[in-house]
Image 1 (tube, one colour):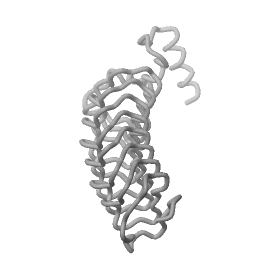
Image 2: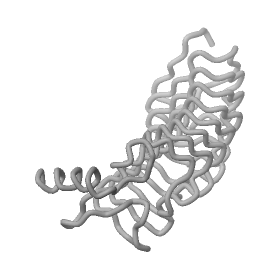
Image 3: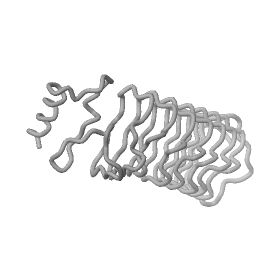
Image 4: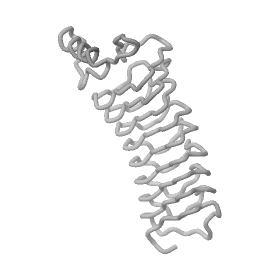
Amino acid sequence: IMQMNQNLKNQIKNNKMVCGMKNEYKRYFLQDWQIFDAFDLPKYFCVKGDLDLSDMELTKLPDLSTVMIMGRFDCSHNNLTNLAGGPVAASVYDCSYNQLKTLRYAPKKVDVFDCAGNKLISLADGPQYANVYDCCYNNLVSLYGAPAFAQYFCCSYNLLTRLTHGPLRTGIYDCSHNRLRTLRGMPHTAVEFDCSYNDSLKFKRIPMGIKQLINNQHI
């Protein structure tokens, strides 16, 4: 395997397997003793491991719309404005720190979904099933499109004034550092619910299903 990795590097360097983009070597990967190009995969191809296209200064994704990725798909830290061409399925889908304004073309079901650090104002068209969902550091004014359930859900550092359309059942729910004045729409059940660093919150009671409430002010 080590020798094959070295051979791959040599081919990229000596045989002009380059595309003129930052970190161009990332487009090539080894699978089943062959070298594949992520920008020229056959239809219905299955990537048995991870596919890392992060930090390549991409403005659009290659056409992976029929490709399934068994591991992690990482297109973070690029200049993407949409996810057109993204894989039809992945275990982990990381599109954080781009310029996304929409989640259209995102997969509907993943284990982990990370869209932090974008320009989203809602979660419309995003995954409906995700155990871990991180959408912090966006411009969210609505949680419309969020999954109904997530083991971990983080929407901190946004512009939310209420939690309507957010998950109703969670393990850990972090909505800190927003502009919340009410907790209307808060989950029915959560092991830990963090609503610290918001505006003056006003609500009458905490649902019995909230095991631990974290808040930096007197309610």
